[in-house]
Length: 68
Image (cartoon, rainbow, N blue to C red; front, side):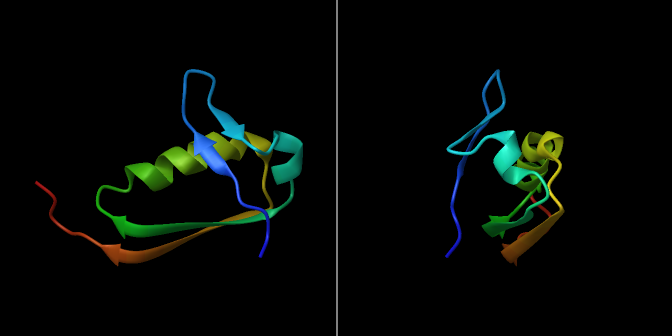
């Protein structure tokens, strides 16, 4: 299994455990158990896009529609 990192969305928008250079040109897979609004996935993508990964994929186990 590859290295795992933890996203930390703060005022500095840092990625704990990995620097930008370690994500550059890498294939990234985000796994989300349940997606409701998609805000978690959007936040993850915004956080790492400056690191210029080669490819970003999302795997969603369940999708909730019509969240009110």
